Image 1 (spheres, rainbow, N blue to C red):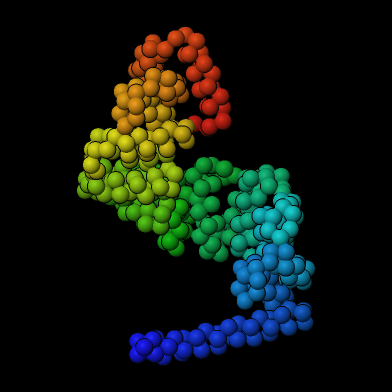
Image 2 (image 1 turned 180 degrees about the vertical axis):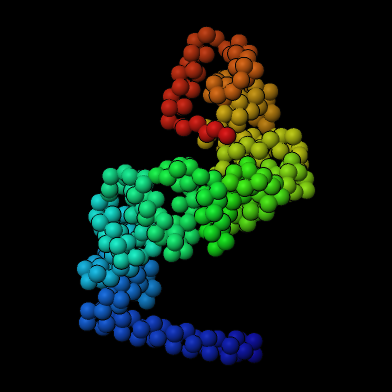
Length: 366
């Protein structure tokens, strides 16, 4: 009983604080509604954001749009961008890319950096406006020069690909580094690639590993996979197969096919992890089902040899047929050898099944 009493003594102040906080939210929301109804564009935008997030009011996307529109029609740039974003996503309003671009442009013309990036992306993809890569770069640059990390990354990507601007690896790296220094993971990965391949900078594997790690620690699957490769092979970093497995697994759990295959291969060979054929099959299958040819071929061999799965000549031929088409003559030889165990009619049936499967599953290439 004394314990229960002590619990109440602890709980009552907490409940009191929560009650006060709830009253403050209610008062703040009431004041916000009052200002919004009085015509304050900033309050209208903030109230719309509250409805969109469900903060202080019940979440209601349609009500969010209503208040965003009021702010937008007064020329308030954050409201214009938010209304464009609602049209882009179809949140609380029918999706309409043309109207999204229209409102993005209004906000962008006022210098709103997020809207500048958004209208740039619209020009890059042709969503709501005619596709125009030069215009995309123009707007990306405006936002990037204001310090928006996402725009800096997008501008770097344009220079990397030569889209809307002359390809320039050094300029790509310059913009990626600006975004990377703000902690933007995709840009950190881009900087890592620049050092890894020597694009726009002298090749430096240790520096590549350092930037990959920064991105990997932010759950960037590309960087996690590349860092795993570097750990496995001792490139730019001390060789450590256990650490390689850790990064492969992180990327694999995000659906990264090459990492899934490498993790499966590690289980198959017992490198960096205890040998386990069942786990090998599980991870290799995940990669194979995404259209990764190496994994498809490996899964076919597993079925053919009964490793981690019961021997099944038909399944072996199916997966080998899928994988071999993208690999070398040795793979095709293995496929044909597996097919020798089947009747001509069965081979034709499986080839047709493979063809239909490949049509609905885009291939993944290294």
